[in-house]
Length: 205
Length: 205
DNA sequence: ATCGCGACTGACACTGAGTATCAGATTAGA
DNA sequence: TCTAATCTGATACTCAGTGTCAGTCGCGAT
Image (cartoon, rainbow over all chains, first blue to last red):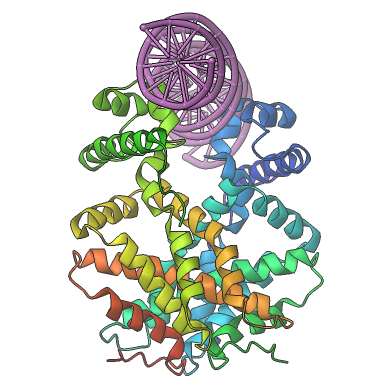
């Protein structure tokens, strides 16, 4: 994947980072993201402002760094996919890997998603990460296919659509407090493409 | 639509805003978005920093305010659409209205898109606007349809996918320096959904 | 004409994010 | 144990964005 800490230095850094994020997250939920300053955070965590800023480049990253591996999770899952399936199936399954990775603690994820949803700055930064993931995912999706004229646009559209589905589904899921079945939600979302494109939108299954 | 200036006050404000944006845009293209400060901009435009900031709440808005009406353009176009068409056709045509609105001066739009592409902060803010447009567009798309279970998710996915297409198509178009036909690009992009979802992605027409 | 009101402007002060630097403490590893 | 790399806190700085205030300008009513 990405960060398997090897040296003791890495382990320490990783642990401190997690603890700082934990403390900060409580503050954000309590007071609101924009109302909390780095001074507040560093005081609450018992470190200097400088140190806090060394662990997280921006305030947004304090919340969103947990999403960093998602891009790799998706590309890896796409590689593991059998190549004889169609694009939508492969993308659907890759997205299922992504949500499996994210849903460790249901309550925590629901809380994070809620915080993100009501904070424009967090939404924006998350979309930015999403856009960074896209080129690599497109490359993996196209790897098996001979690239014809216009296929690059089509692959980009499909990947972009799939990534949109990820957030729409997670939003719907967190609105239900983590009750709904994420697999079924993914199926419903992808049905937006497989149903005959007419306006009748009967839910499948 | 939205802002048809009526009073002399409105006219003046609109004109000043346009002039400030014009001066600022040259600076951005010359030096790079992040390298230019409000102090630079206000000096170049011959007004105080305070005044400049009153016309544009943020530095991003100095560039992106031209996209503000796009949301309304899309919703209006969607209303004007014949209701017997399927979702994809209606969205495609609404997007065509949007690009028609944007493409007044080809060279200018290409330049703006180039600036946006190479400036993460501008990309992020633009996506934010896009997300703000979505709920209203979804509502218009669903207006004719009886809402069944899961149809809300499906409508959201379709609108999100369509908005992604808008930027993908504009990106491709500006990469070709405005040479390619935007209508055909839209057709190609929407073919990502209509082609049988297999991995063969032959360009239609 | 001029009076008064509302909006516009520039100047100033302020908060907070993010960057850069530096000296001293700490720790890994030879 | 010694050394070199790293971590830390302190400090200073730039710049975005907010808020305030006094002075000015345009405009409609008297």
